[in-house]
Image (cartoon, rainbow, N blue to C red; front, side, top):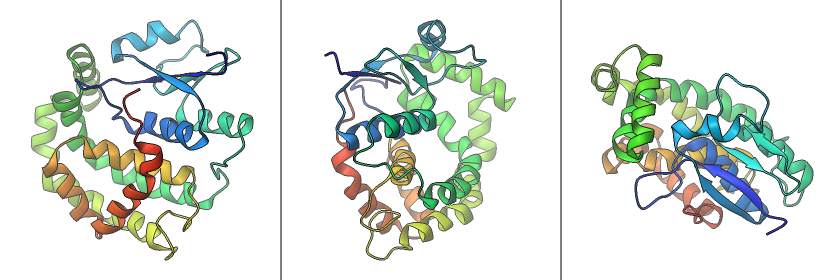
Length: 239
C-alpha cells in the first residue's frame, strides 16, 4: 500500500505477539490514529544490519523504528511520536500533557529494580532462540552477572519492594482525575500508551508476576480498568 507505514517490532515465541514496552508505545499510537501500517518482525541480532544503512550512525540501533510512506526512517518511540503527531495531528496524542513528564519521573525509578525480574523472564519466556542468545549475552555484560544470579540475588520480593514507592505514585497519578480511566480523565493520550506498554509488558511473564505487579501497585483494580479502557488500541498485537 502506498500510504502504509512499516513498523518494526520485536517478535516473540509462537504465537508471535507484541510484548516489548517501547514498541508498544508506537503500536498504540498507530492504532489510536488509525494509520495503515504493517508490522515487520526483527530479531535482536538482525537489528543493526537491517537499520544501519538507513539511519544516522548509532552505537546501538533499537526497536521501535518505522518507515514513513515518503521513505523516511525513524527510530526511538519518543521521536516517532513527535513525528506522527506532526504529520497526522488528529486525533491528538496530547504530547503537551504534563502527565507525560510526571509519569516518566516515576516510571524510570520504578523500572530500575524490576530489571532483576523482567530481564530473566524476557530471555526465558518470551524470546525466540536467536534473540534469547543475543539478549542473554548483552544483558549479562551490562549486569556483570548471569541472569539467573541477577534473579536470585535482586529479583522477587526485594525488587517489588524497591519498586513499590514509585509504583504507588503512578497509581495515585492515575486516580487524580476521578472521572477516569485515563491519566487525564476521559481523554486518552500518549501518557496512557506509555503506561499501557509497561503493563502489557509485565503481563507477558505469567500469572505470578502479574499478581505481584497488581499487589505492588497499591490498587490493582485501577490498572485493570485502565487496561480495559485501552483495549480498542491494544487488541491488534500480532500484525
